[in-house]
Image (cartoon, rainbow, N blue to C red; front, top):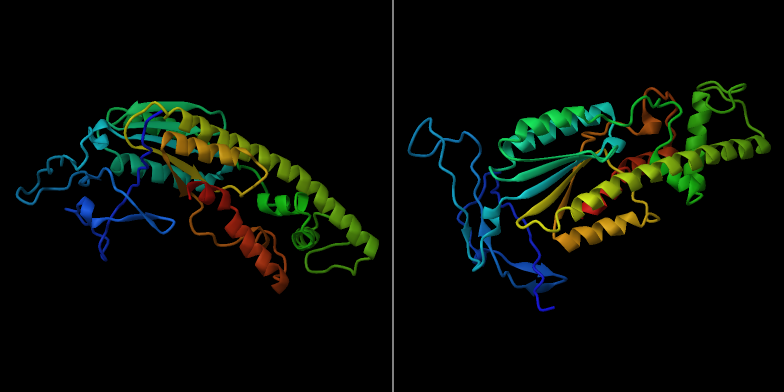
Length: 331
């Protein structure tokens, strides 16, 4: 078939003080890929004033909507209305993260969309979907957002093993991570309860260490299997959401609001999501709901274990790797 492949690139230009830079033209931009210059075949300059922003000449009155300027000889896609799919990842959100994700999504619906945009809200637990056109459908979307509940509820920290730790232990047989989790379980009394107490352990025998490691590996197999199922289910929802955008025209974006998922190269669904996003020409954004991470599993005050220098590297790696799958998907 005779056709041209056009890749949409969204750009926001701000000055040093964070203020938007307007009145830019196609000649002000250059695009390169792999070191080679790419032709800019279409350019849309879009200016969306903040809601309630008064115009320069009239105090107290809202500025009129600014029509986008386009250098394309086709119908400007920005006038068609944008399509947003917000995936609320219940499977990877705890209550605090879910509250932050709801607040961010509510703010996005208030300031990040324009009249005529279509927004779909999808949950990963059941795949439930609500679709509305803005602004009349905003309240319905907010009500639906309140009905989506976090899935990571009721897990205690003392016996918790992170998804990344479980993958490294069960799939990669990493001895260092295995020993980190084993020492944490010994300090909290989750294993060897008859002889262990926090901060006061007897010297183990070699056969006891082997038994403890086997216990940790057995738990890791269960945690990893559960994590893989959650990741596949969540990414499956993202893939179906992307496929639903195939026939739509205009700008298409998927916002993945999640506490993050691990990068698991064994799941083929990762590549399927990337291929689907490229096929429908949609951008994927990761909204990280974790906020500022104060401590990892092993450093939590609830665990109460001694901080050992040899464990610090593993703990910080765990914090970074928890969201690597989500960030890698967006990249």
